[in-house]
Image 1 (spheres, rainbow, N blue to C red):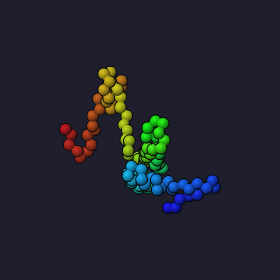
Image 2 (cartoon, rainbow, N blue to C red; image 1 turned 60 degrees about the horizontal axis):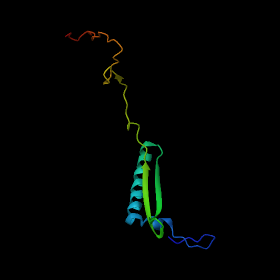
Image 3 (spheres, rainbow, N blue to C red; image 1 turned 120 degrees about the vertical axis):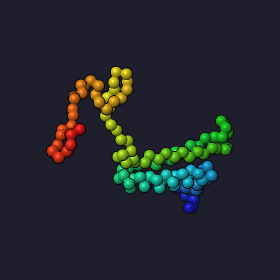
Image 4 (cartoon, helix red, strand yellow; image 1 turned 90 degrees about the horizontal axis):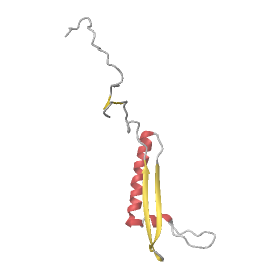
Length: 121
């Protein structure tokens, strides 16, 4: 990596070089791992995901801008497979319990049919 020189003549240190030093390299390593996980999730689900880096720069002490704290926060939103959030239909009863049978619907007295060649119970 080389330093960039914009039109105003300033020499700007490459972002990647700074990123590798935030948190002793932990932010860079975390981003690398999350990117690999994201790519794996996207290729296995066929759905999109995002990886976000938020860089915060703040003075170490109010009014003292000669020393700055630089924090890197990463957020990965990987797609999940269709089975990641399975659901079922339930009905609430009068006491707030969930049941698979509608408590407002009367139950029919159903019984199995005897079939030829099968002994009846």
